[in-house]
Amino acid sequence: MKYVVTNTPDTRDWRMLLANDISIIDVRAPVEFSQGAVPGAINLPLMNDAERAAVGTCYKQQGQKAALALGHQLVASDTRTARIEAWREACLRYPNGYLCCARGGLRSKITQQWLREAGVEYPRVEGGYKQLRQAAIEAIDSLSTLPMMLVGGFTGSGKTGLVKAQPLGVDLEGLAHHRGSSFGRTLAPQLSQASFENALAATLLRNQLTWQHHRHAFWLLEDEGQMIGANHLPQRLREQMNLAPVAVVEEPMDRRLARLRSEYFIDMQQAYCAAYGEEQGWRAYGDYLHHGLYAIRRRLGLERYALFAERQRLALEEQQRSGDTDGHFAWLLPLLESYYDPMYRYQLEKKAAKICFRGDYHSVAAWLDDRRGGVTAR
Image (cartoon, rainbow, N blue to C red):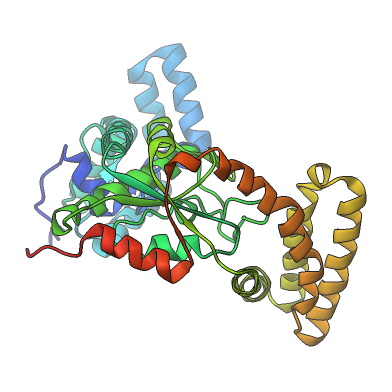
């Protein structure tokens, strides 16, 4: 009996797909997918990397007809059956999704046809990933011009929490899978630059829907540098951030250290051990802290780096032995006072004319709520 998953037609509404986190069954080769994909996409390729390379070589040497014949030869019998079954299961799991290839052409049409022969009707993205990518770039360029405000402050001030608590907050560090410092990496690997931008575009498009419900809407972002780990901010967004007013969070050192203890010494240790097991997790957690300090050794000066590294080593031993994390402040506190705080203070001085408010975490949160003007009636 023919099973029809959906009668949804093929679509060219690329912004809708991005804004609504629609599931995409991406049939491009893994190497293409790794270079850039949209949020919510799963990679179930028509051809793997080796098959795609062979077909591409054949196309250049013998033309499209020969390349198509080779593709059918490579993806035949049991291989074809297995891939159709994987697509079919994905279609059942994501009944509101779409098929997508590079340009919405041959590969997604072949996949669509093979599924149809197997009793499954499923729509595809016309124009493919190329058009989704173009829609993402255009969305960032246009939505970055809307009103914007930044949250600044020293490390441990709670800036990310403030951004995430706001209805129009855009957590750039969360999207980049990196906290923006030498200790910023997370267990999740960073996305490719294109995938990071696609995720940013999807976030802006999704949150744009809430603008009409606020009297004085504005994007709220952390005051970031040009790079967040390996990802760089898109040029138009960076330009608008350079013009935006800045609200500065001024927290006392004890509150900053409490946040950093929780984020870097407790949460990260638990996350590594949960991911890798106790023994390997402790080793990976130690490597993470060592790498964070080692990455800035030249800026610290080798003598000061050696001192901090030894204190870090002793603190790690004590944490693993007793669970006590106080020893980490012997290297973290002077690192903040002698490196991170002076560096950010210098950067903030250059933005003095754009600072519009200063206060502790709760004062800034209240000021942002008041500035936004509350929620309008729908």
